[in-house]
Image 1 (cartoon, rainbow, N blue to C red):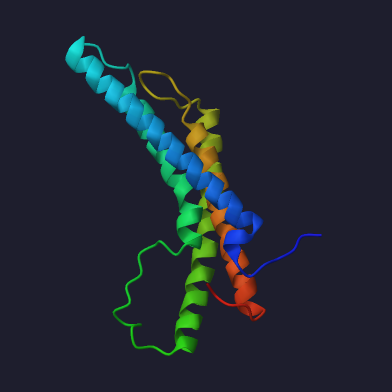
Image 2 (image 1 turned 180 degrees about the vertical axis):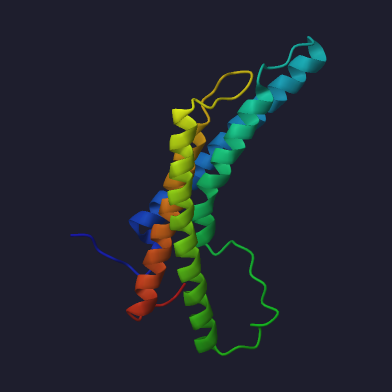
Amino acid sequence: MIKLTVDIHRSVLGRLSNLFALTGGFIMLMLAVITVASIIGRTTIGQSIEGDYEITEMGLAMAIFLFLPECYIRKGHVVVDLFTAHCKPSTLFKLDTLSDLIFTVVAFLFAYRMSLSGLEAKEYMEQSMLLALPTWWIYVVGVVTMALCGMCGLYNLFHAFVGGKHE
């Protein structure tokens, strides 16, 4: 039996989001190492790492996707409180719940559409120019992370509707 907690950070979704963010950070660290090695190689021996731009492009895309669930559950997205600064807590709760609903629908819609695009990229054997890396890998990461974002949104909505704190 799975125990549901109001604190999403302690839930399975929160831990998975944290693991995804750590993985994204590791990818960015490796990209920094590749970039530095390529620059040093280019300036010292006149030879850079072949395909370093492709590796960086694909790695950054995956890392950004991997950061999204953790950013969402930590409320790290941009909030413009110009109109809500003086609202009552009940109004803020309703607006937060509405934004969670919209975010959840959009996250699942993105996951669905990216899965179709990824299948098409795999079917047509789409690949990078220099290293011939398949591009559908990035879609897999995107679909999984957007589905996780959607599940985190459902978690927040569930707790908002059963009377839990909206964190």
